Length: 271
Picture 1 (spheres, rainbow, N blue to C red):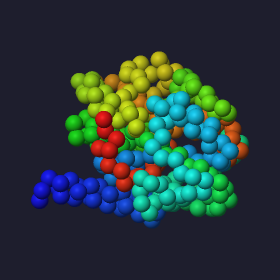
Picture 2: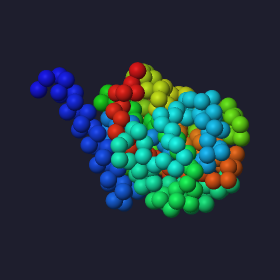
Picture 3: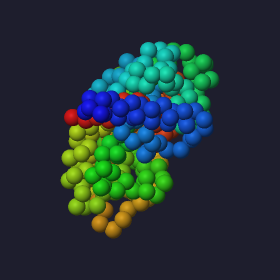
Picture 4: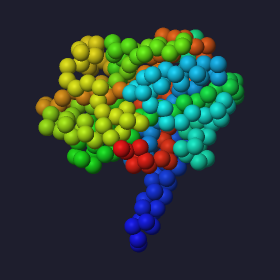
């Protein structure tokens, strides 16, 4: 097999993994997607009525670290260009429904939501689950995967830049990293700005306004081993905090840790 055909075969295998992951989700999988379809880009979802779309886009543009947009769909569209045949109504394990800034429901199928709100504009925001495969290949432990847990996520005291009617504080995800491997984790993730890139903070959580690591605002409590250092990455749950603060009349998001899996290879987003 030539190098070109080998690369094509690898790409086809990765794409197949995305198709299989979405099929598994459509069949009823509702858990976190960390570790699913390694090598493919995962994404957070926020969908808002068309008259709020510019505010969300401007908020993301002003806050690219927590909100790196990788796709935007026209009103009512549900198939992402990053995954042929995909359907945002069914291809995430769980969704959150927001009305006037209040979380009113969590559902496993959003078909009726899109039917009731045909003008929804959907934004896909790069997720740090994407670069976990590269961390694992470098021998860096992914503690939440090892424990079968969702990644812990925390609301910080760091305010995002407001945009139009949207404002809110940044959310971060935590991955405890052995001290000797922190520099390597920074180097690896810095190459992925489209999925949050390098950490925003290393060390003392109090510097981010986080009082108790064992009580995350989203996800599960962390597993921290002796010698681990807390390392925090910007998180795509940030728009959900902004929704709660800014109270648009309606919004649909992913449930934290439960992402949309694309067919885009992570290598397309590695710098």
